[in-house]
Length: 411
Image 1 (spheres, rainbow, N blue to C red):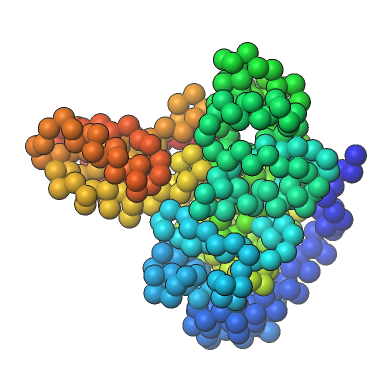
Image 2: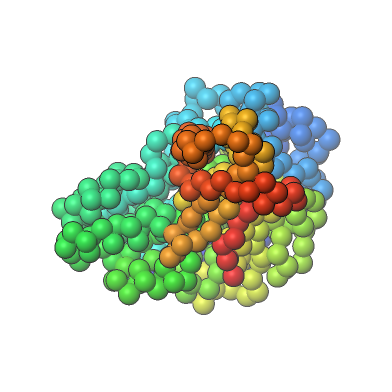
């Protein structure tokens, strides 16, 4: 079995860095010349001079949290794409709302590398349990599986009993989806008395793979690794069989910045993950993800030579990810505004048995017992995630500006 996806994974670090820096001027020039938004953002930038990380560090940062405003002002993609929506292959709308494009070409999001590192090979059957509705994750992993020559069962999310039946019926070799849902499927299979002997590997994303959940899944015969990406950038980093940090994708340039600034931090220091892509259709330049991580020293024991990050270590802002869905403070504010009885609210995100949990705390000004049910419906409608609603006493929620509190442990 081939050990690496391609020769890029084992090239000398110096050669990789030189190739990435050599590609920067063209990428910057393409964005500046062909994307109206970047024509403004990079108006004072000379693309030919951006040939080093030091030069890149002088460019403006565009934050994921800016996309809602940019896209509202210049729909549909905020002027950050080099071609119009009608020339794209697929169009997506993620909660926020944030519009995401997919251009033409095999494995446009670059997730095939992560699937390969997870052990997927030509001829495998993949049970793809990422969402296919509006958001791009399902398409991302399907196109990656097809690039490897895998067959895909488009499971999507939900319908757990049918997921079990499909895995057993087709003899699926592996799973792609969120960590939580993998456990749910395995639990359902046990409950149904349906063995899944062919299911031996999994690539998960869209949520933290907590150590207890990883151990439990592996004890049940499924080797699970994780990858890290976003709807805007595609693949950012992925685990290999070594499971010592996440290896950066070959098609991007990653900086770790001091949160809220454009300043790189020393290797090893925790900061915000900022990515520059070499994608000609959607050439994101110094795109701040809002995620925290840190560069690890040395190379992976698996032999891949790209830099590694520790993985997702939380959020640099209050936007967070719950069961694979980003939730923004502005969405919580919209829920509150639907219900005048709410004086103050906070969404508390936690982990319950390896699965994401969400509790919506709200102080109310009178009302009856139906408020909790009504607020629950508003939450589901606005953020597409179910949360337990708890009505608490006045002044129980601290007046500290925190709207989304993430209590999960990432270290």
